[in-house]
Image 1 (cartoon, rainbow, N blue to C red):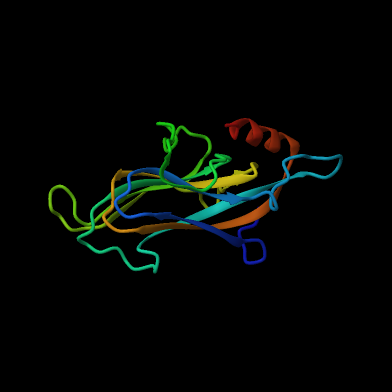
Image 2: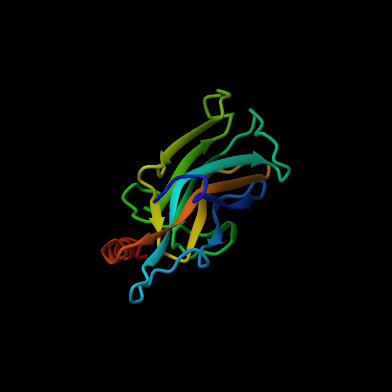
Length: 186
């Protein structure tokens, strides 16, 4: 697996959060063009190595920075093989352990806290929870990855959550492929 200019490319997706909504939502990214989890004869299987995930949360649909007086909180994650599709806020219910570090399908995640919190402080905060790395990427062998979010406190204005993935196609020997397929079972 080479983390270099020749191998790495970017994929991205985003989800829209309507103003004053609550609950969970999702945006699905189809990876079927980049993954072939079946080794045939001498041909090895192919996975998608995720080296970095860059999350951005913007206010409104025109990518404004979030106002410091804005309230709201969210937990956001990128989950391999979730298969939830694209869902507006409040349409889906997520498993209680979907964002836990023990979830083998969790590629990356973070928490967001709006500027105006219960104690009236005004500091927007992002808290990275899980991230892949250049040396040990998360290798996806499922045909989709979903950007999932769950609002802890609703936001008064519309927001956009987006993620850009630094990734590369990688060939996998049979043992590694089998292990990844076992751990990435929903």
